[in-house]
Length: 513
Ligand code: 5AD
Ligand code: SF4
View 1 (cartoon, rainbow, N blue to C red):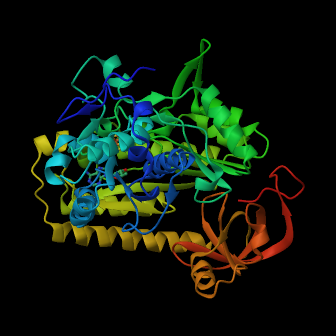
View 2: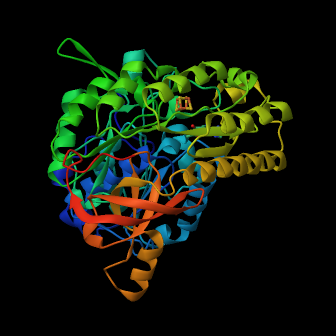
């Protein structure tokens, strides 16, 4: 598909430059060491993985040492101000090194790139290019263009971003955000057995506090055909678990060959792919949690009994300020359906504390909602005013940081109590655990002693609980059966029941939670 917005160089027009005719040393005479810093959500982790995979094909090699890298990328997040500060201070630290070494190329990608655009060059003049969430396919070209500028002693200020939500016709805006999903390099995944698969980009919900509809553009679902061929490739590479990603993943809708496909249809199709043992999806939007989806999870053994459906607040007044489009009663009705159709299903939530309009009484209602809905876990965020959002336009950010912090801690305390109580219910039970590899502490110990056979393993149950237990590293990538004997608010601790391991959920062992 054509890109509506061509890359623009803000100082000089070099769009006619043919990269094929460049002096060889300009493009190749740098050290090909690539450093990338990623902040933000799983969508950003996936974007970084795909960009790195593309650059590796072009001879780049990842390094953890920013000083030795001559190509430096920041994949940024704008959801809260704090995440942006972090990136600007990392950029600040690079100012001197970039001036000293003209071969150093610095790029800013992701949500902050889309949101701040030219402002990034003003705040951090050492940046060579800024590339939005919908232009990631252009990263390698932008790196090379930056090197051309440097070789001519020119300043490089390449900008490739999508259109703003009011800057054109809907189709033009949509076209300016391209999903970037090349087929994968197996080495680039965080675990060989797990992979994220994007099924949609963007968001059209426009919650009043949230910057995502402008940084990630209009909601667009990928075709089932593309998604299936990607999952098949991943399965052939040994992936056992796919996590389908979308900002409101259960709003997925795509018409292919005259037929409408929803997320439930996609689950059925992916379920048939040999080699895939588990299918998860995040993040869901409460109003779109339809019964066909819950029934698909019930009927498909590979679909995990886990849903991430953020409530965001427990008070209807605040939900209204947030423009979330539902009430606590609607959410309760959804939870009843989940519990009826999917008994034992875990649900996790996100909450914002200190949103404009939140009173002490409304905060108490959020605490109450954690007790009522018994979330497996909750991600709790202090409200951060985001320029350009409806909330920033309409309401002053009047709640002090001290109060936000206190409310945040109170939410965490209640959630921890609930999580620990519910985790304790698993003591004495057996769970089917997809083994991911050594636990964090085992990994640290192994790194220190260069011992590769770490003893403590970590994995997840079908209801997304983290489970640690002792076992052989050979179990990684298989389903192990673990009996739980102890718990913390975040982890179940168990011991392995059978050392036999299976590669298919459908084999003789019973499917446990
Ligand atoms: N301030 C604080 N938290 C926010 N989130 C989104 N926007 C903001 C904001 N302006 C939270 C929501 C969302 C999660 C990814 O980030 O809870 O679900
Ligand atoms: Fe942001 Fe709301 Fe869209 Fe989630 S649903 S990405 S909170 S606008």
